[in-house]
Length: 197
Image (cartoon, rainbow, N blue to C red; front, side):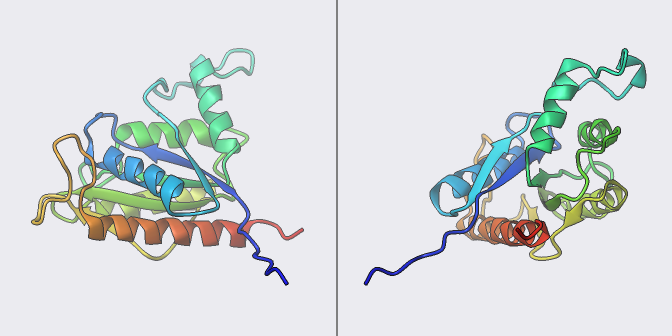
């Protein structure tokens, strides 16, 4: 008799980095998440969604009800996702301007963020970007984003042992394992929020 193994349904995750710098440690966290979903976590399809093409929010750019093409493409990527992974560096105790800009474009009616599960990861000095989490969570309340509570992931990037290589790639195995825990929690929470058929 063959055993029947139920596989987890596939979820789509949009991965967004608040830093535009190519060698950013936070972008390295997104690259690690992408690798983990391909190599060791079943049931997650993740796509990096680049926010650098987005113009600064200016509703004068909406002409005859049509958004700029880069904005519409971005919004479609978010609409097609089940959940969001944010890599949010901390700038002056807050999230970055480019990330806030992306959140604002997505919030225009209809709000593409609404009712999606989300998780935040960050790397940096001092508190490892933790203060950006608090601000992003506050913004998310208004946008109807639903963040996982645990595990929290804010990595003190400059404390020994080395966490990243010179290209911003995560090399610390313990941090990779914690990232995996975040992704598994995001997957479970996403499935929990989805309507039952």
